Picture 1 (tube, rainbow, N blue to C red):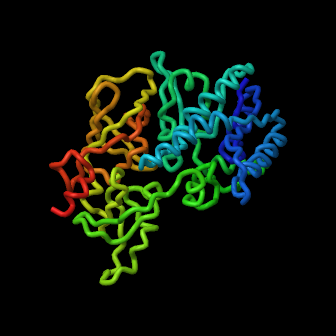
Picture 2 (cartoon, rainbow, N blue to C red):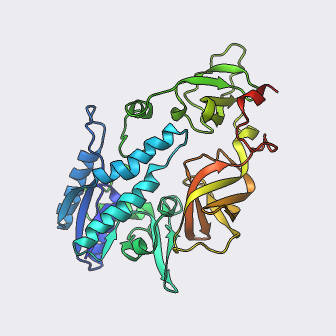
Picture 3 (cartoon, one colour):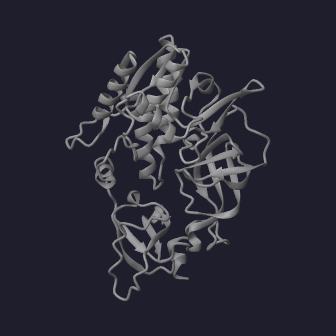
Length: 377
């Protein structure tokens, strides 16, 4: 038996359809991961459940709605808040996959007699030489292996990715042919527990904002920010600096963050040297094969979803971290985000960007950005 995580979207709908066509005994679970009261009605869970139920009815599948909200709060949302409080920019989708879909949900399904779980992720898996390997989805515009690098051998041995070898257009075509209500449904974007509400409004419900100064790399104070948690490296919008006297109209960008002094460094240059680094340190490393490959390792990496693969070398760094050195400088390497390693089509694993090495504009300092006192020198 296969238990499909039916999310109410077209991808998981077609995953269930394909498995049924392949002769599997299929059941479905709708995972409800967020149960905070939403007075504004902006969380799409209720709509998604109705769509999932309609798909299950069309396909004749038994459907259960299962709450993993307690797991989600403890394993995903609490670390999410902690990261923002520390000035980092976390990726909750990565940790939702690791902690909920391929851990809590997997264990739930296996305990109830399923041999496999299935999802609508655009990824593939194959067993070679007794080792399960994670591969990119064949549609390069939809590949989601970046979000799945934490999957280990147990999860891959019990997971099917039915749409991983299809293009998105083909998925929609098959959904329409089968008269599934989700065939034209817009893909979900953003963080599931935030829904369509403004990010700042949501975050302010859980974390106190701490306003602070906006400073240029030379140390000139040019404004104030609303709280470090609302900004990330490379960000352009929300700085409220467009009307400064004498401005030439060029936009400002966040080029560095000094969490210790609650200061954002801004500059009028999309490609400011402070934004570029040739290496990073990553922690919380996971290897799909379950063992660390021989290091140093020449491979490719992504530091954000849908980025082109970047050539790099991964080397040991202390007991449980790695140093990733790129062939070309990378823009806006963001602590809290993921760096994911590849060898061609195979996803090897990845980790969380923990710290960065000196920027291209600060090669002689081991701090990034430099201490505020140094900006006046």
